[in-house]
Length: 292
Image 1: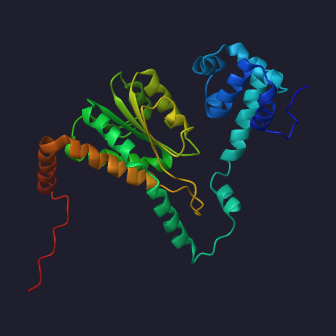
Image 2: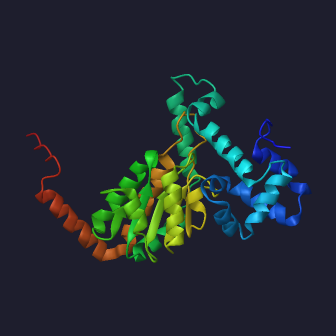
Image 3: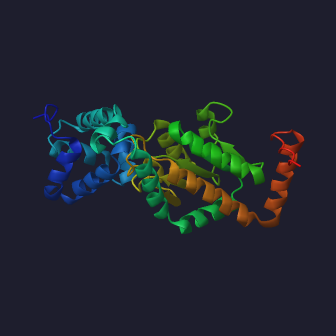
């Protein structure tokens, strides 16, 4: 009997049924619960390869949960994500309740300060070493994360004018994604709800043999899978209707600063050369003459 009319979500059905499933189906079920985003964006064959099992295992898993087959289970997962995606921000307002306007700024600032205190500096330093040694660096952030990627791109190029590229910065993003090569370092920036372009970039970077540095809100994020460096930041615990970008921005700036420090005197020379060019082009408003 089909589950299409059931009120139970596929993930709820999976978690309830998991203890009674055969070991192979349990493994597939746990993989599906952790990678439900991949289940709606990858083919069954690709999903099975990532899980280290046979495609037919996912068909049997779907049937064990009461679905006619994998396609029906996948449709249910897509519908679940579509429903959640319709209100990713207004849904937070309903969950958080109405906040008095006067107290909201202070609560948001307090939440951001608490989130920053949980960011671990050691992984940032390790990721900076990878950037320092990289021949070519790609930076990827889409939608609200675009600004974070642009800040990191700007700061790195101040002392690394060559070999640092922003995916989609000067042309179609798919051309940049297609140009990823083995040995490149790719920085992926994202938080829930995750955009399709960032998932595609992550998948292509992994398939191309790139080293991945992921700035993400959770270890289960699509960009975190296969990443050599995972830099976590808190995006969702604040009272605002929109997830906070403060942790991502602070992490990006710390990453750029640590990479510059590893560059030593050569990086300082290039930074001074960049400053001279900026001065020659009169990019900054001159400071006012001091009053006498």
